[in-house]
Image (cartoon, rainbow, N blue to C red; front, side, top):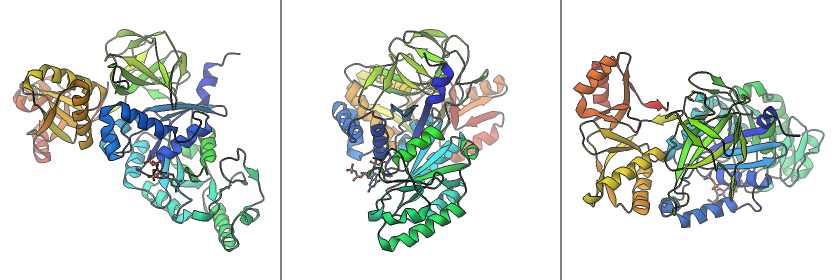
Length: 522
Ligand code: G4P
């Protein structure tokens, strides 16, 4: 019997892994895919990364700096669930990309290095999740190495993140003697992840024999204390973002990954409601709706193809259907939507809420775009952050100015940089959140368009989107400040200021003008 829409939706789990670089995100992703049967041998994710790097020149940056720049999605099935992992760049210079990706998930796995605890980037990403009430499952990784005391790590999570912790498992042993986890709630034990089911046991005492003699007493005392002193898991509190279930493991050595995957299936929520301008869209609503949160171009440099990553919010996407693009009101044929697995792409015949499909296009789709079956509706909340760095692009060959203009437009549509066209007709200004984005821009302009460029300081360093309740107030400001006004890709006006001081000064002098640092796509 065909699966009903409600059944299909309830099986979906769409999540991101958030972590400070080096905590083990790639290794964990690899292991999740391995257990999900999406890859045969762990190592393929990295191997694939390498292949892509050799294929595409601009990724040299990634290789040189050893960072992951590309966001992608990976789908796998495990037990009865369909999991969609949305990968996020670890480096903070690509923060805007990460934040947009987090608008498309229903849950997050926070990976913490057991020796390092909460690191700056973990904190930052956590804050974004909290802003959106995204429930978080915590995975304390690298228990096979010297680590901090588990209680100390839990305390740190509680204090730094103001988040209640509920350890579901407790580590058996530490570093060299680490040999599995005791499931507090279920009273079972799993050694390595080779074991699919946990073995029922009779309390910590009955587990201690797995450890060297000198560690048994400590393990029993500690685990009993954890059972007594820690809060029991409360799913409602977790779904509301107040509590995190905690798992201990070692992604590299295959410990704790199965616990985590089961928790994603059991605890993590199915696709959430999404807020649109006209109504709240429920995942089980009949009609298809989706929004674009990421554009990736030139995955195959031979074809200037662009893939728009769209998260389905409701209904059923069927290959061949027509969708309405809210921004233009035009119809778009979804002839070749794709699913992404670890090592391949596949045509997506049907996709449901929570799924992410790649839609190949030649620039029709932009970040923040809404697709529907005809309804006039726009999803809210895909953010655009005001850039931290503003630069003018200097072209070595002035004859190629037109080509540069086109290339910059394309890069901006993809979200690589933001582009601002000054009202006074002076050359465009590019804006980025982190300096590495400029390196990517430079590399890509050279590799894909044959345009050697360099960057020059602009006389501006701050940029804010502006609006006013009374159109006349805005018009007046635009006229008076014409030399400091530019338009973004959508034609929305921004005010450019030399520094924070002059921004404050102007905003006090013009109270009718609202100046904001975050623009939500509309
Ligand atoms: P990231 O994506 O969060 O940046 O981290 P990644 O998975 O690349 O892991 C960072 C390093 O930590 C890697 O070592 C990886 O092998 C190691 N690692 C990940 N999980 C564990 C674990 O559970 N235990 C131990 N002991 N190490 C772990 P590397 O030497 O930097 O890279 P590689 O050359 O081994 O690939």
